[in-house]
Length: 361
Image 1 (cartoon, rainbow, N blue to C red):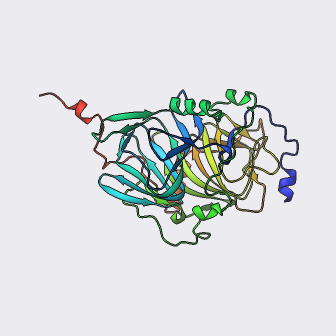
Image 2: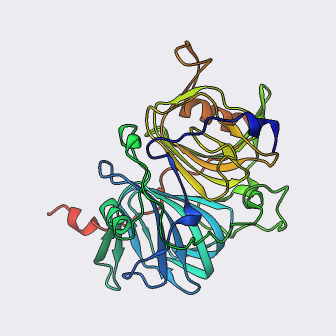
Image 3: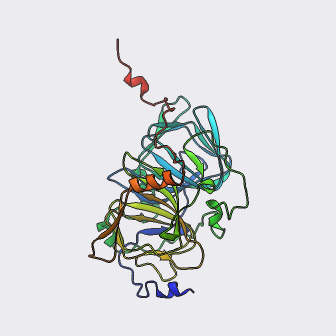
């Protein structure tokens, strides 16, 4: 055990619901409307309609044609998926990150082999039948219902909800992710990757994260960022983070979520050994941390969506020392020559409601 581990949070005494969940312990919940598709449910918001899940597709199964009524980002963790949209196909491999913008009509997502991916939905998805009419809609309320049915406590969306009593442990046997016990660093780091090949992307909203350069600032040499998407519309930022140093005291003005891929993070009232691969977190708006850090000698790597600015300080009650928002992330991407994933698809002209909007002569 490293010296940092011994010093981190020696008085571990959790109260209320933690901000994260170990997805390896969650059950796979089969979706009967989509044969071969299962979900691990993490969070669902009744206020915004957003929800976060891990999706598993059995080999040969597929998500049918769908219209994404709000955006969705995904990280392919294992397997291989053929993605079809606008009569073109893209081959998604582990380490692929993508953003499907609102109103996009996706023809198909087919698993060439058993595949698992992290998906953050910003709203409902309308699944279509063979006649391209709406067959079903998956909403945050459906995710809440599934979680209740299987006894899964969802990660709270607000600070006030975090003070609820801790739930009883799940009675099911753990169902680990396929990446459990593997080197998660290989998903996103070309140095650790055994394969030099990349995915076959014919759509602009996918990227092989291994090919995205690490942004490393001179004054923060222990923290690297792969900046994937920056939204000027709502200020959202999507990243891969390699955090081998200590993040000083900060407050989340907007919420954020992240999935640990490699290493262990010392966090909140977490255990001294930290949280490892497969643990997914949601930081409610207003959450404050005195510090977060790795607690082993491995590279700590995690995915991250940041839904608003971070305010840094030198200790609780001290003046603000720095503010980090989408503006700074976009400037960093430009300075390091990073090509960002677009937040809209201007080539997608197939809207579900197009026939309803025709102007009568």
